Length: 242
Ligand SMILES: C[S@@+](CC[C@H](N)C(=O)[O-])C[C@H]1O[C@@H](n2cnc3c(N)ncnc32)[C@H](O)[C@@H]1O
Image (tube, rainbow, N blue to C red; front, top):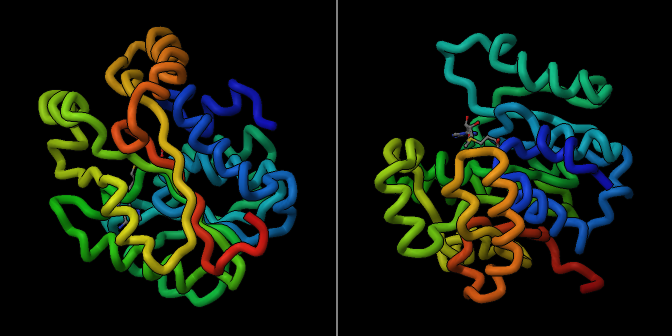
């Protein structure tokens, strides 16, 4: 199991909450049993999840949607450096993939992403999000699964704070709720869990860590939909054992 410092590199922000969101996937898949499995990370940026899956033996395609104006070699510099640091660079290839136009059929055992839905659906572009999930469904092998975690719309306080302080919100980020995820994932067999309340407001690294621990206890006082991270396991086919 990955240690905390490793999760700093995988998640980079609000580690305590996002770490638990990723570890939730272990409830359904055996992360130690993905040797040689084909994995696609979408919207990877620094490639944190690619690192996570490659460390566990997966053959990973680390992808992001890179505009023509940006040099791809330059774009992947940070991700490649990170993957080299952990000695998994040989197990990872890098691709320019628009998550709305994956155009692959039954290629991957696992598709994964973190914090990508809101960017794909920028300015209320639900049809982009629909295309993304339809493309993921197609690209998964039979028996494959989608593992993702993303931002929920959360409470009124989350929405108010984002409208005042969040750059992503100002750039049109589309925060989803459970109902919207349900309708986007209607072809899949899904399991959700949600995490995090207040740590997302705290920029200071040490205070953020502290609030991450507090969130773990306060979460139980709120309904799942009011937390700010959703983690999802979505199977292409009905799982045999649940
Ligand atoms: C908030 S960042 C998250 C990056 C990374 N997954 C993480 O969690 O650190 C959003 C990512 O979505 C990517 N993105 C936006 N539109 C996309 C699209 N149409 N297809 C694939 N990725 C996209 C961006 O390039 C960016 O890397």
